[in-house]
Amino acid sequence: MIEIRDIEIEDLAPIFHLGERLFTADRWTTLHRTWDEYVPVELFHTDRETCLVATVNGAFAGFALGNLIEKRRSAWTYGYLAWLGVEPEHARHGLGSRMVQQLERRFIDAGARMVLVDTAADNEVARAFFRRHGFGRDEAHVYLAKNLTNEPAYRRRHASPRKD
Image (cartoon, rainbow, N blue to C red; front, side, top):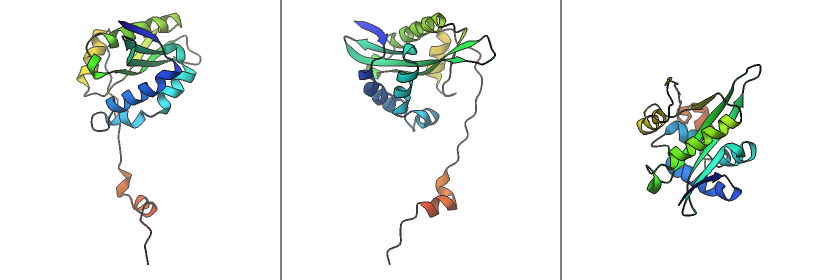
């Protein structure tokens, strides 16, 4: 039996560990860059009403972590689906869809007029998933990176102490 429910404190560790397996540096550099143990903890404490967990037969199977964005001096409130993850053995069985739909209802109930989501430009699976759920207007966003390990200051800071 599939259940989509509110996040509970006991879900934080399974959420973090699933994120660690899904958002790896070799596959999704920018997602890996921002995923850490503080992500689910912070959203649990600040935006619990927009954080969901999927279970299958009572066992953890996925998560949707979102939050509301209220712009000062604006009539608009946005829902932001920050993170969506499903255990690989449960992928493509509708869990992600059900979590997105329930999260959208919660955003509507909270007064949101629009839902935002972002993903890597080359993540065609995620882009197709979100398009099927009515998301559109893809906009390019460029992330730039610089490897500091080649910088002299980095080398000085991390040089091994000389043994005389």
